[in-house]
Image (cartoon, rainbow, N blue to C red):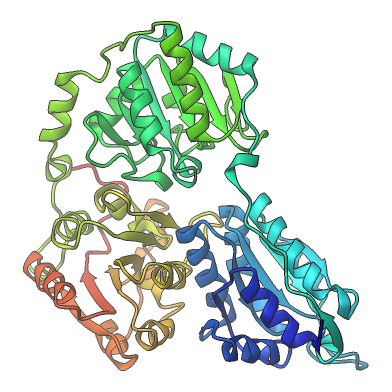
Length: 543
């Protein structure tokens, strides 16, 4: 057994537990163990702002589906994280925030009640009480975050960091899916009975199905039922390339998808919460039998009543349902018809709206369609929050195997860029596309320097209408002057170049294809400043 300091034990414990990348910003409360961590070969991604460090960890955790650690010093560093931490909590991202109580000196200027701060964000809290507890506390914190998907603030007091302990390595091991709860036979019987009588079923997958790697089983179940496939927004394009994939179910569905889901008599749902957006405020559930499967026992029926609630892993549950359908000799219903598949294959998104672009301004929806076709098909997409969202959510895809993330869970603008940076760190072999408004990206311009320093394979698309878009629309609707929401921003391409990124302004579709050529040539990270009309609302205009 080796005697080492607490700060050395923290670094070793993080690496022993598989935390090969952590995010953060150095300060008195964390710089020793962060330095030890880097000395031992850990990758520390330093952010410009502590809130952005948490958003990076959030993006990395979403992309990898693994616990990701982030470290900041005490006091104001923690208050700087609270908006991003609240977003991570509400997104169910497995993020572990390491901080610590301030030095034990009277009237220390940076003192903060860390338990209260964690509670304010909705995160859990754990405090290391004694030096010899630190390895065990890190292990238990990582396990808690992984199993509950509730971010935690781990308080490692500054006063403990230089104490010595007898070090034993962390025994943290990632949880196995084999330990997950499986549905009861009674709930399976109820679900299969509903599916046996359904004539127009639809199989719906959410983020939980993606985490379960359930695609193959769900496609097979849909074929067995003769059912179309749909996803939530967070599972966007999970069934890309499968005939009868009707796209996103909810408020950003396209017309064919809306028709197919509205006419269904049964939804069988895996790993999706069926929130008000997926359910279109309940409209898409009306008149249907609902079978809902989730690993969270509280999920089935949380937002809307269900006819059968199954608690279990999506892939394993789908497999069990398929076996029981075989035993009952249930044959495909034919709702996933040749006619439906033909209509989906012939769908042209450009016909769904009237382009509102002008000589030197692009319609955001057209811009998304053009970039969707021009950029590499396999990509991760991350969107910020704002009026612009309707365009990428509906018209920018991720391709087979790609991931989609948004930062709307707390309704805050300004988190998307840093979240995309974290996803790009996890996805260095692929491409990450961040989409943000000019108002939101202005809150985190400086992290473009982080993207450049890390040489990230990142495209940042700024849908730049020169205003706070939602406020522009709401002021106009209230009969007030919408120009009060206009922004007098610096040249966004100049800003990007000054921070080490490539940049191009897009005022027509030819510029978008030039941008795609730059991506193909490896000019990354790249900022594309898409100029748009503030008077065009891409989430409201339907042509």
